[in-house]
Image 1 (tube, rainbow over the protein chains, first blue to last red):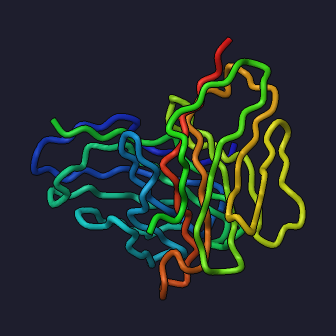
Image 2 (spheres, rainbow over the protein chains, first blue to last red; image 1 turned 45 degrees about the vertical axis):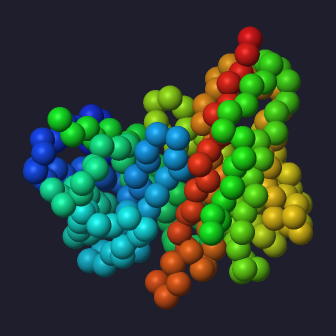
Length: 114
Length: 120
């Protein structure tokens, strides 16, 4: 079945560590996105990519980094520069980055700093 | 300025009754898309329904319909015959060309959501 897979489902990070969240899709979508969700809040865009080897910052990119070496994969690294990384992270993809295209989401990764 | 506003943090509805979840939006572009997503406690985001700014008719998908009032910039979600499985967070979202000026992208901007609880 086609879809988006995020791993791990739960992730614990120590202070000062970098961690990488995985996002893989087999929908053959060009566009991929990373969102952050905090309790009681909507989703805020961290990074997005419309094509391999290209990506753009969203609203809250500071302290995060991404790569897009393959169409299917868009990993997110939460660096030690991110001061408050505890949140729920959602990866999404879309066929095209157009006004009428819905995004499909993964199951999410819940990151906790310990 | 907030682009998507959902004014109801929480709503209750009796099972089998209809419920309306409010959403207002702000954009200066004539071409945009409006989406509703459901987020159960498991966390995944499930696409429910889409309405394009040029669509003449209100969108419908099964028990979901969208009450689109363009002049008022509102796109309310109506769920008919509520079921216990409808209990979840519901998010309104919009794509418009000016979300990230200069980037040539059409990003989804989300509201803060409404928590719907269906009562047996």
